Image 1 (cartoon, rainbow, N blue to C red):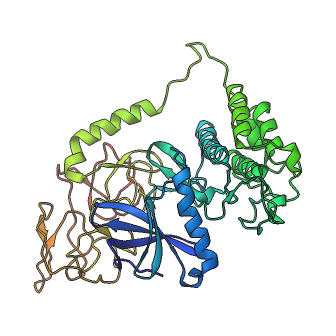
Image 2 (image 1 turned 90 degrees about the vertical axis):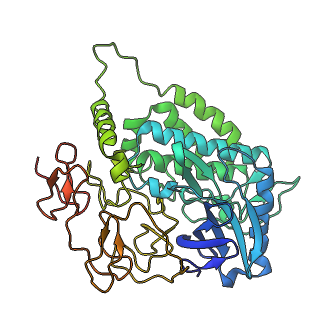
Image 3 (image 1 turned 180 degrees about the vertical axis):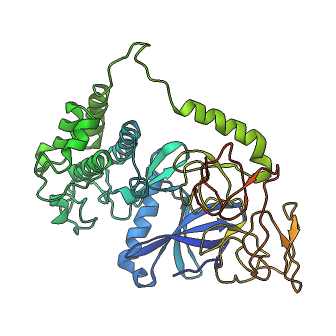
Amino acid sequence: MLRARQRLGKYRIERRIANGPVAAVYQAFDSIHGIRVALKVPHASAMDEFFLADFKREARLSTKLEHPNILPIKDASFIDGHFVITMPLGERSLADRMRKRLATETALDYIDQSLAAVSHAHHCNIIHCDIKPDNFILFPNNQLRLGDFGFSKLVQSTLKPASGSGTVGYMAPEQAVGRPMFQSDVFSLGLVAYELLSGHLHDWPYDWPPDQIQRVRKRVKQPVLNWIARSIQVRPQKRFPDAMAMHREFMRARQSNGKKRRTKRQQPVDPALWERVRFRQFQRKYKKTLETRYECTNCSGPVAETMCACPWCGMKPPLHHHTTSYPTACPRCHRGTKLDWRYCAWCYGYGFEVETSRSYPDVRYQAQCANSKCRGSLMPFMRYCPWCRTKVKRAWKLPTGGQRCPSCRWGVDLDFWQHCPWCTKALPQ
């Protein structure tokens, strides 16, 4: 395993995103281009010709699969004895997003984008063979991209029998016995679509109607249900011939899923309108001083990287782990850190390996550590001194004064917030 802050060529490892049986995916900082990327690195046990052939095939297939919904590969090379595949860094996987509630239109949009990705692969005569929510990566603006083409098969005039590679639970029956075909990807897409709409993965023997079908019936109409039922037929001949035909039929079924038009008197007032007005008022007052440049992953309210919870809805934590404006991140709490800090200022984590002896000034430093042997510079709302690890005892105030939290005594604004972003307790209304 690679460790946080370990160097790998021009990349500086920040944290491990995922760990599979043959490879791990890391978030890393490209020190030359100045951007964060995702690195896929095989384990030492997978560095043989059999597994390396799959990784090399994945890199070669990427040149044939240029599509907005397919994850591109920027580079693939050997670095310090590791085979490294470099990809753009997304926000999170579709599997992570599915752990929270999904609006029906959002779920249908994800299904549409996943079908577009696999349709392009089938158009290029490529069978993915490992379609599952973990292999779909979310990017800003809800863009979905399909990755991990390591198990993919290039369809020739006669497709030879292959090993039953894939993921149990999403694998078609014929693929499990080494006979992958276009209909195998259709089957996996149907299971992913059902899971998006129901929150439940349909399993063997794939009888219809499956469990939790009532949840799906409340969200979509019969044409979409018929489309799912045809996609997950046990016999490949009864499914759609490929993802292209599956996508065309989905577009027709989705159009029939539209709701009836309402008159103006029946149209409900959007309750989120007044929330957006409050957010704009808050940003005009606090965005520069509190650095609330991010949005909560739950309610989209403005939040800062220093906050432990969303002050609007109480979400803990309010941001994804990789969201930071600092040059690197703490491997324990994943909050931002500076290169000259010795400890994390936000959690009582272990010390860092100091990367440089240079001291970096910062206009955000506004106080000093209370430790007489340290007297290091502090930024507002730090919990620990990044130089000596001493806990900050002072109660930080908001730049405009305002009220204080009854629990932690730190500054809050009761005109906007329902929760304390520093101690996560509910505020009196």
